[in-house]
Image (cartoon, rainbow, N blue to C red):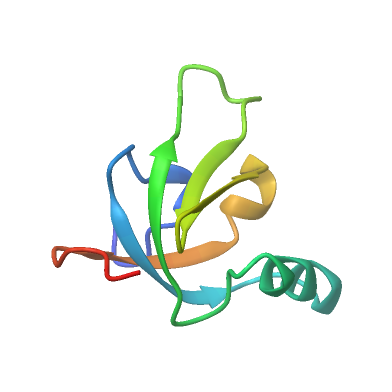
Amino acid sequence: MGSNPTLAVMPPGSRVRVKAILAGWNASWRLASIGIAPGTVVEVVSNDIAYPWSPIVVRIGGVEVAIGRGIASRIIVEPLNEPLND
């Protein structure tokens, strides 16, 4: 997955920490409004790469949200091995 994987390539069940969001102010603000910002730990619930038009579903603090692939490809993440602490 390289040194800077994005949320768009993470398989279901992955737990990741958001490292950076490479998007404009408006997109970053919208992500922050749903709880996705640098430092946030999220769990990938659904990511069906066989259907590239489908959104990626992530869980943040017990809430599931869908994110489009375009913006997910701009969210740089760090895979985690520790359990998610909500």
